[in-house]
Length: 242
Image 1 (cartoon, rainbow, N blue to C red):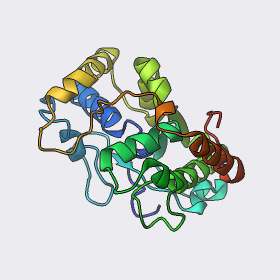
Image 2: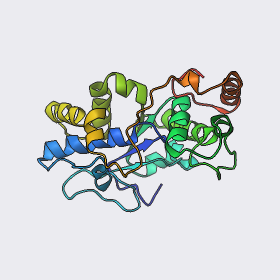
Image 3: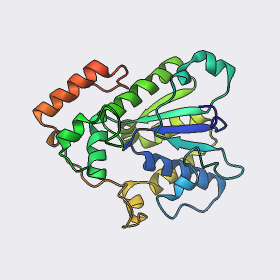
Image 4: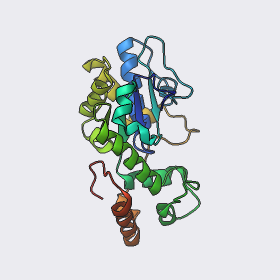
């Protein structure tokens, strides 16, 4: 929270919420605006918008980082934000159900989806599960509520529906100077088909291919568990109706 607060902006995302896609658009837009050569791989954006512990971007370009982190409780303190300068936080979320299905599909844990859905409250068995998602929603929901001038919310579904409008919201909130031409170019350069062509076949899949409806993954008992768990523990729903 303190060590890495020298960034202009931080893109904070849920697992499987379009992280690579949004990072790729942002990198491509800035590269186009600055006249840099465009990324050749869909992973090149990690060299520009990477982990805050090891990354500082390119000289002369706004320093932006990305993270899946759940924030310290003090990050939601209005007093702290009055005393110190922090990055602008853009929070990218997705329907928890879709995140769980996508994460299960990507990592293929050696258990049934129903077993994975119930997760591990200790947070040791899976990289992300329903309990991690709830912690993420609640922690960043508190930041969004308490310091709305320092954090803004973008939903993956809205980004898919109107990419230009939602991405422009991100650019404006971080205070970046990126032209409409560069944004439109980056969106075209970062669509699903274009990114798939620049993905190494040996790499772990990032561009998803399975578009089965969520209903096919959840049994009646699974949905009952999901709804009851959200009802009991979810304090901030991020605009979704669970």
